[in-house]
Image (cartoon, rainbow, N blue to C red; front, side, top):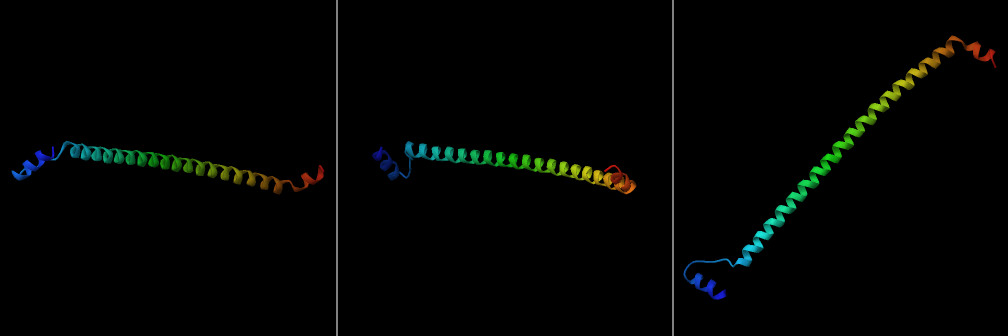
Length: 92
């Protein structure tokens, strides 16, 4: 093999041995696999973040609903206390 490369060099040609081509191809495959793996990780992270954002929105909406119910109940209790303050003490 070395003699073939030397002979080709003298003629102005250069042949890359097969193992170098295989090594380069393996390197390109590894790089492509790494890129695909990173893209998959990015997609997974993006999906997770989207799910978390949706969950936060849902919890915020529930918190607002609970706040309104609480405020409504407080108003009802306050109006009942103002309307009949003596009735509570008379039954005691």
